[in-house]
Image (cartoon, rainbow, N blue to C red):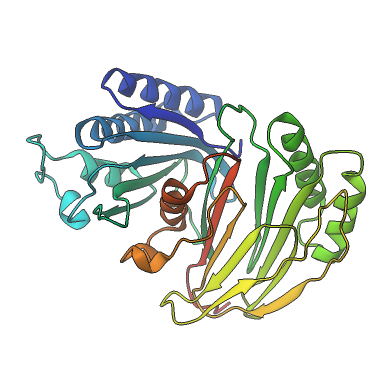
Amino acid sequence: MYCHAVFPVIEITQVGEARRQAARLAEAAGLNESLIGKISVVVSELATNLVRYAKKGEILLRPLNDAAGPGLEVIAVDHGPGIVNTGRSLEDGYSTGGTAGNGLGAVKRLSTEFDIFGSLASATQPGGTVVFSRMRAIPAHKRSMFEWGTIERPAPHEIECGDTWRIVERGHELSILMVDGLGHGPQAAESAAVAAEVFSVNPFAAPTELLPIADRRLRGMRGATIAITQINACDNKLTYAGVGNIAGHLRSRTGEWRKGLMSHNGTVGAEMRKVQQIEYDYPEQPLLILHSDGLQTRWLLENYPGLINCHPAVIAAVLARDFTRGRDDLTVCVVRSTSPFAI
């Protein structure tokens, strides 16, 4: 399952439904009873906070089954007034709503991975809070060289998302696929699934090999825009090849160094005129942001002080919340290298 299940939370009756759905997803993913209990607590706390403090909010749920092991991802997103002091909000006993103030601290303790970002609303900038939690069945024994997060949503009134993505890690290498099937709905989702199937057979093949195969497979179908990004941490290099309007941005963690990744015009499966993979320098601990055209292009991380230092899933959630076009499928993928590349 690559898309989040999304549950709006506006009133207190929806808290229980979000908790039950999280338990069902966790049980279907084969998680044990103890972990399901922790997940239920986390979802209840986050959903209750949405009702108490936010104007409107959502709980996003996604089962995990990657190299770090099975688990569940929970992201709470709101458009509320924002948290003034996220550090204090994690302290037991701190509350701005007259409660015991143990909620967010408990969520952090129960999480394998946790992060939070709050921004205050202004005349030019939306406000709100994003809380991210991943709970794993088995804590990771070896830290990955990469951390990543994605947000993906179907177009309004659609069940299937015409965007998809894949991320595969192999030692010091990472390969990322992002696909936007043309249009939206079932036919776009079918095209995206075929492209993902091509990628999954050999995700570390050269992009100039994978894209022509996808082009042949997608003939007679809706077609898609596709970008493939491959990172080799030992060589401090990033290889990128894109056809169509997937947007790619690479920047240093300090924001002093940034570069746009170049895609060529065309449609895979219809008019793929040119395939070119370009190699970029990949500085230590950089940030990679990829997104489909369901996200506006006018976002600036600098407008959110401190956001660039957050977990990639939080960055993706903030961008998706504040800059969705609201009429198409949307995918945002953010990847960061976690440490200098000493192998």
